[in-house]
Image (cartoon, rainbow, N blue to C red; front, side):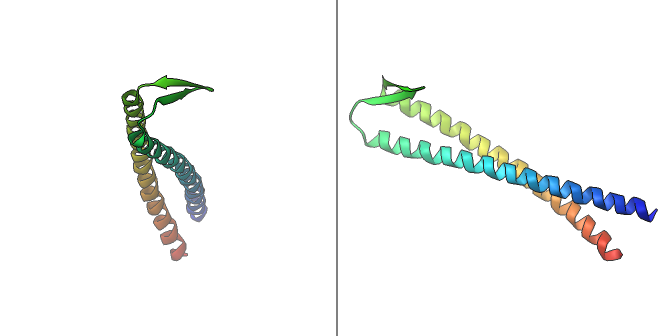
Length: 113
């Protein structure tokens, strides 16, 4: 029976390692979205300042576009990026909570030995 517990503990340690990798992936994704959010905010600020013609980049081409249309597009993109960040944060929190629980179980088992 002692070996089963050890295997269980080893399995939990493996789960913790996998969770740590997942948390790192979430962090990288969140940083990417935060960078996008920063760029969108900067673009919106610049659009608010400009009185000149505005352009939209489509692929490798710049196309003249209405300022209002660009602002609406950027606000929509900002909303989507914010939702993705919130979703990642919820997933990250759930994973951290589960990892904390498993870590407590492992530590409790190791202290018993």
